[in-house]
Length: 63
Length: 304
Image 1: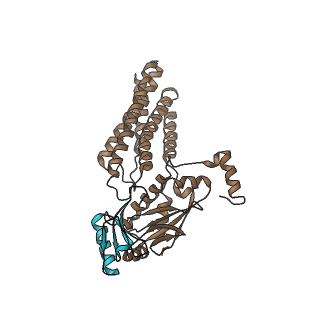
Image 2: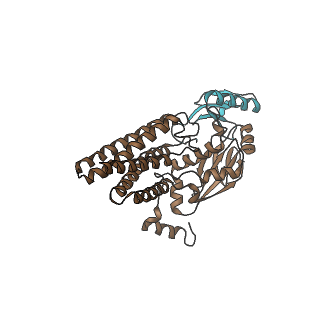
Image 3: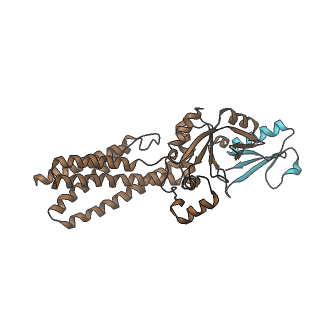
């Protein structure tokens, strides 16, 4: 069960526009399809979960 | 001496039998190993022997001999610690965790079962010593029945209604029965969850039930039970598919979403209904005047 607490960590953000996120490892994608793919790969590699902020930013979070 | 031997024999046999009857192996898969059986049967036998020997000690009379019952209590506390440690170690590798409340409840149950075995032995030995063997048999029957009843805990189905509810996505947020459960970023995961997932709503029947379901340990126990019985598709690198339980903050209802191997809503309802109510989660605000007054003010006409 993903518990919400201070240990939840943003591992990376995948964006198409670098102006949308800062302060975390940032991955730039060329299109929406590539963005989803990168996010999915990162989630599998880092044992994290992809969350959609619905403003074009995908973040990978470990719960 | 002859009489004492019969007393001790009857008492010990009844106590060991009680422990054997309480040694269940079900979906909890614990103790699911032959060695686990041996350990608990041996401890049950020792507990029964201690209980049975106390009666001739009193009859003799050798009252100081009864102090070894204190020694037994010490031993059984050790049993609880041992069980807790084992379960905590195993918990680290569980994909859907039992939760500390569940573990504490199981460890306490193991300790309590030894006391029940000892109590049964004591009652049967006492009946055998002072009332005869027929009465000993009757005492054995009654105490076995009592142990059986005492150890059958209540289940979630007794305090709330469980109904299947549909899953939907509002944007990226998985929602069921109006409760936002979790944000899922990947579109194919959303499709998978909608296609293969199930959700149920747990509607508490009164304020006591609501307070019990509020407990995080109780929620983990519900999710764990559902995951063990129906299976779950979550993996170490796929946390999206982890069963999730969230509360409707306005009504106190719980929503459980799970992506099971067996997609059977009725089976999920049955699994959730049979999840145990944990001792540590059990709460009874309605037993207090303040709790009842709060309920009247909040729900002037309603049941809840």
